[in-house]
Figure 1 (cartoon, rainbow, N blue to C red):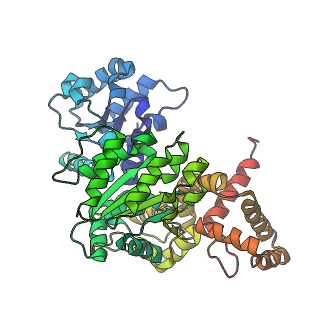
Figure 2: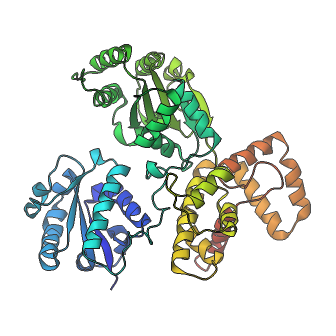
Figure 3: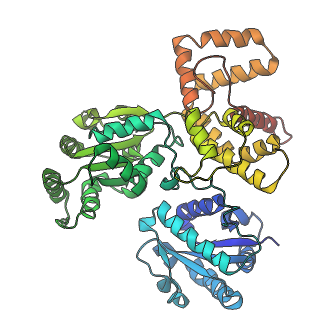
Length: 509
């Protein structure tokens, strides 16, 4: 029977948070019991839960109003967790997502210390705090295999948007963004999903990022406000009140106490009009604004007005240019959309990729034991795509930790594709146009056939304007190795198409 280090118990309505937590725990090599992964069609649900509780070392219970209102949690999960605690003395860590207290859910949790995550929001710093306590529980129990010990911790499990302290500065474009912000120029960061937009915003709003900005601005105090449109805004009309509340928390006095949009406007205008330190207001996943109905143009006009003040600048991230968002015509006419300097994200350069692989802790003298051969292979595999780089490095690190012989790159590719397949699938379905996919298909077909004539024709056509745009877009997504020179497709996308071909040729179809 399989052993588990962590058992996660949650209401199905909290799946989004629970799945994020599971992925985070798994990224640091913790073996996690999670119902969606363990319980297969045809299994007895309660039998599998009993088995998981019996074979798990630490129980994590997600406490929320959803769990409190769940009859399943009350009638089936409660007695099993209680029995597990009594019979095996397993530590239980409640994670609170709202104002619900653990003892509201289960009385026997009354004196159990718990951790709170703010407003259902996956918080990276809180996760690190949780991880520290999990590690201490494991060490106290003196397990034979310590997954969090210094020699087995995978430094590529916690990176970028996960932990700002380990953020690698992605080359020239990051410095350009910071230069604009230091001049209080509003900035729009544009790029496909998984290229690092949220990572940059989270880094800038972190303690380390703030120190970086302060050095550039030569100002002792800078206020940073981070708002995730995807997770925190229920109604666009509530934005200004929410912004006022977030600003208010950073001030020792003059706290916002209003409860209407008009009061929020007055308070924000007065606060920015006073001689306060600079304010950097960040809107992550800004393109989600297209999902809101009947948007009040006046809100954007107000944002434009405060953006004119010398002590306020906006930093927004979106998948496309903001003037291309699907908004009402009158809303798009707001001057707010004209104040931004645009920066387009792409894959990383060789220097940033080198820093990631060999110095995964930027501020510490900790080096990996990767070789130059490893680096060249990973670059060819991922085309320096930031997320795919991390995935490849994570599996390469695990293989090197478990084996002393030479690396089997075939095994690395197999492990890598299990995780990277979903990235390529998303790009092909959501980010790549029909003519771009045809271009990929033509290249791979000519390559497999050894058709040098057509490959040369494709290479010549690359210099035409239409194909320059195609190749540039594919380069930005990590599909093509570079924008100029001989065409070279990343090994990862070639492996993905081979997998698709094998599936289509299997007996299942």
